[in-house]
Amino acid sequence: MQMSDGAKPQIQAHQLSFAPNVFKSRQFKARDLAQLPPNYVLQNLSFSVFPGDRVAIVGASGSGKTTLLRLLNRLSEPTEGKLEFDQVPYSQIAPTQLRQYIGLVLQETKLLGMTVEEALLYPLKLQGVAPRQMQAQLQERVDQLRIPTEWLGRTELQLSVGQRQLVAIARALMLRPRVLLLDEPTSALDVGRTELVLNLLHELNQRDRLTVLMVNHQLEQAQRFAERVLVLQQGRLRHDQSAATLPWLELAHQLKTDEAQTATEWDAE
Image (tube, rainbow, N blue to C red; front, side):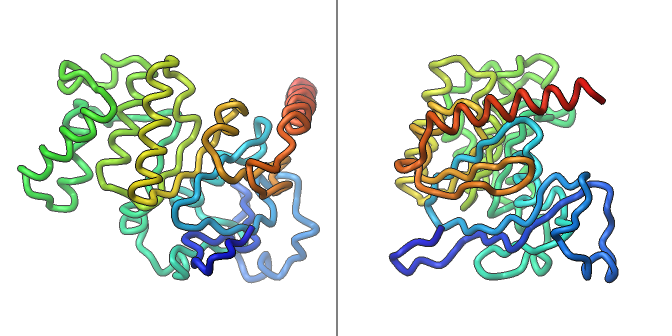
């Protein structure tokens, strides 16, 4: 999907493929991608993301949604193809630098033995932010996400899954990223906190042009939040289109069919 207003892509994926147990080599690069082995998680994805996009990534279990987020944040490296950020290849950007611009919130989050306050301040300490500014940014995120003061001294063992999820979102926002990648960010939140998170993301998107790519299995939520939708099926990009034109009922039926097929394949193994 291309924008018509002349904006330049923020993230570009070019024929992106990933297999967890295949190592790069000159011989491998010369292979025909049409002959990819069945252990590929992602196959031949090409798309562009523009500043201020709100993108939902949907697909059945095992379709490669989380893997795609990991590639976009360089937690994993593509087996084939390439990624660019602001027209610069990922390979030319240090992972630590890239992650200052592209934040990632996975479903399973860890505070690495730190308290909530320490975990929230840690990214700012790495950047050498002044203590007074760190506290101001901490207070801003705590207020925005309504994180109770008593949570700040707790460790992850003293938090529920939903509480850890909320803290992880706050931590990702501390660096004021230009792109935020979210893997089922509200799966463990109640309705009230879900609305709070989605409203904040919408506000940051509108005010700061924060680009948001969100994996979400709740199609109603994806339809309400996203402007664009990437539909993955068995590791391939089947649709990249406006949320307003996507046939959501057909998509829901297709995802049910895909989930049933995946369950059958798993039971057969």
